[in-house]
Image 1 (spheres, rainbow, N blue to C red):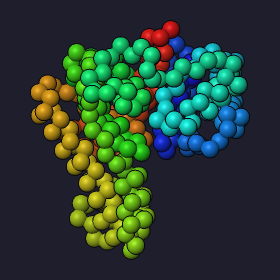
Image 2 (tube, one colour):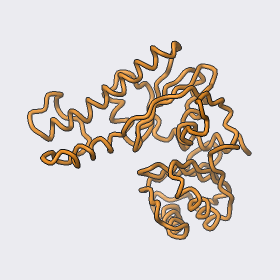
Image 3 (cartoon, one colour):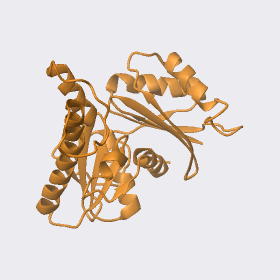
Length: 257
C-alpha cells in the first residue's frame, strides 16, 4: 500500500491507497519541532486505532511526500524509513510530473500546487483553475493542453480571521460560519459576514479576472479544508474535492514507478 503525505503550514494530511482506492485518511496539526520518532508514534497510533485505522494486515510498502515546510521534510522522510522501512519519494526537482511548468522559475512553484494541478488535469483533461483553501489560498491555472500556467496567492481564511482578532483590540475571535444575512446586526455576525461573503467575493472576483485574461474555458475546482463552505456560496466553483492533493500524490508515484 502507498502512504501519501501532504505537509501544509497548518495541517498535514495522510492518505493510504490500495491501488487507486483510498483506504484511509487522517488530518493532523503540522508539528515542525517534533522528531521522526515522535511523529512515527503518532502515525502508527492512527493507523492501528480500533476505529478509523487501517484494515487488518495492511502493510505500507511505498510512500510519497509533498511539503511546503522544508524543516519538516527530512524529518518525515526519516519517520517513514524508521516506521515502515521504505524510501519516501519527495515531490520536487527530478520527479516526473508529466506537466510542463510555464512559471518564470519552475522551482518557485509550491509542491502542493503542482500536485493539485496534476490531479485535476488527470480528472478533467481541460483548462482549469484550482483553488486550494489552506493557510494561504492559492489559485492555479492549467491550460487545455495540460501545462501549468501560473496563478495567484492570497492570505488564507484562518490568517485573515486571526489578523483581525490580533490587530483590532475590540473585535472578538469568531468561528468561520455563515451568518443569517449579509448585513450583520451585531459584531459577531458582522465579522462572520465579512469573512464568509468577503472571501467568496475575493474568490469569484479573482476567478472571473483569470478567466477573462487567459482566454480559454476553465473548469473551477476547489480543495482544502474550507472548500465546501466557500463553494456553497460561490458562483464560480463547480467541483469540490478535499482529497485532490492526496490523489495527485498517488498519480505522481505511479508516474515515477
